[in-house]
Image (cartoon, rainbow over all chains, first blue to last red; front, side, top):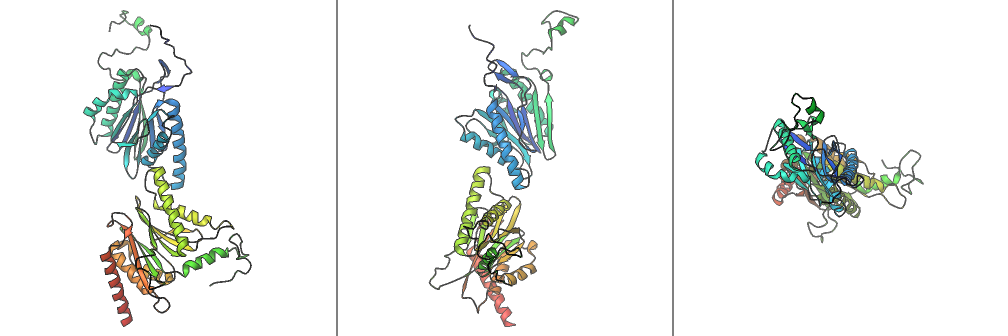
Length: 237
Length: 249
């Protein structure tokens, strides 16, 4: 087979990605993996795909890294002006609408799927999914990115209305780690952002501390660990 | 009350020595001479009522409306030059429409009032434009509850519990202040403002008038609409009765 495993490192960066947003009773939790890939090369294994738009609204970015960054920069700028004009924080609905206006109007040029999540005093916690093409859909939970293909069935079974914050957090982390296990374009660490009336909390779950799923092998930081172990037989555990 | 600003009143871009812009004050006179417009904020919504002076018996009742819906959730009562008022309403409709298209939610009433006020003010800044000869009372019901604003020809806009412009505004304001608005529903408020309008109407100086009323409240599902026919008639009857009682004293 004749293929070049070292893709051009200057080629457009794409985020293979698994992104998730769920509502719970009190707010929302956004979750994502951390792999940015250029073909087969992992350009950034610890990227932050959960980006802030305002104090109370964050987005998960998937697809083209450049496209999703520029869209989020524009929307952050518009939301900032809107907040000043209104004299109070923007609502999640307004943020989501601004994202989809850009996505829809530039659908021929952009390739980015975005999940908008946040909390405002009128509607509470809300999640909006804005896939390729610029549809906007308000959902109790949303999944996106290449890794999400492996999660549809999982969410059908595991999702419940009105979860607590702990339940929702565990659901998100479990889902992202399941997707990382099966999707080659997703990997690295799991990041979550929780948004509610009290504010925003970021959490970080290192890749080697995630649960192991069917046929997954334990992570080793270095082969030197095996040599220094009491039983220096490789692949013996 | 009125002073002639000889020499300093020819252009809206000229200040008088005592810091006044006379053209704007003259524009306000156009509003002061028109039929009374009253707006009140009750605990569950807004009521706007207009004393529509009828110029000719040949006019069809119900035509020449002076209250207009700006959006589903808001409406505007216009005093002063009718054509000028129509422009202000058109602009407000356009602002509300554009806001919803851009931001995906109905325009907050405060924002709408700001935009209308900016537009009216704009027309007082250039010598090739003249100020609007109309003032508006804007009432709406958004996610922050019912709100009432008044925009004057100068471009000034304030939020009110009760507001009145036009001929009978002084008397109307006195009457409004007597009402306990925060305890009143719109249904009750409709009756009260009808009484006020009938009370301030000057039978001697003015010809007949038509009562035009609209509301936006919980009962109307937070939509701006004409007060239902039955309630309107009830209000008119109550107002006429109250007037007769006063005359009987």
